[in-house]
Length: 360
Image (cartoon, rainbow, N blue to C red; front, side, top):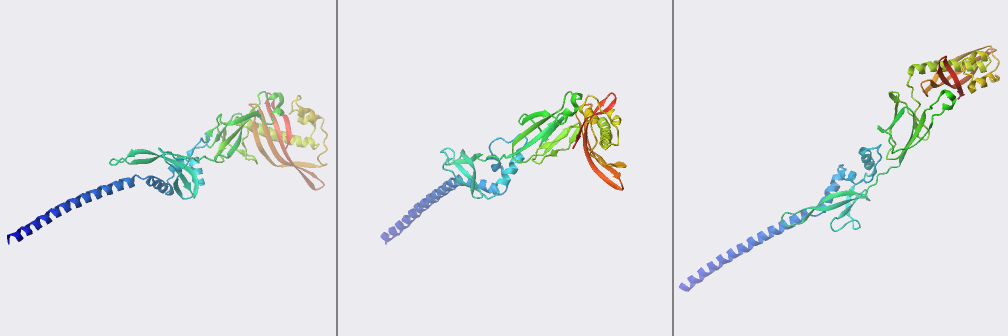
């Protein structure tokens, strides 16, 4: 009887020890598994693909700061970052992703190719910026984006006369622009009456991303821009004395019509010669002129009179372009001759005088 009792007690003790040990082993295993799980979690969290996946998600959501940061090289002083961003948005419209670049990568700085629409177009460089606090795994961040060159294929030519200034996209011209200068066309017609002819300065601005907005200012306000067939911008000489310009305009129309009457044999040279200085070529040309152009007629008048343009070359010198229709009548018929003349008018002590005339 006593032997069996001891055996039963031994069995109980054995199982007690067994379960205690088993519990200890299981506890150790649980702790070990927990540590392993923590290790794996921290290791996984430090993997670089999390950085590139987040960058791709950000780009594809429309937040393009990383794309903008990849642009390299200067842009024109007449354009700004918004123009650069606009170009990048227009150039890169596909889905973004990243792929490691073996060529660009180094041991310290892995580099990933930025891909848009399946085409490589830039790079991002990553650098270890921190460490996992428990296991010391490297934590990487994007420290640089590079590889995009802005396309700067646009240019513009701007011609600015003396007394004017030009704005390119709202910014004044600088020495960055190439330039050449020459006297304003028509200055020769004033002869000695124009001692200091105004100049035209032509600027060529290249390296632009987009065709620019061009504005001209002068005489205290904005001036209309003229655009040639090849896309060059210019403006006329500004009028700084509006009262004198009005007088020159009135004189030019009257003189031009007198000229039309003279060459149609409706006026003698003596009637027109008083309005022309004797020392200019126009005087000698008209004095020896023999009218042959107009048909014989019994009457005439002028219609559709208008001033096309007025330019001020100096305080006393103006060119005025006028147009009208010179109608002559004979035998119940009307003969109409369109006239388009530029008069070079000078204000003298004796009044306004014509020193040149160009038939346009």
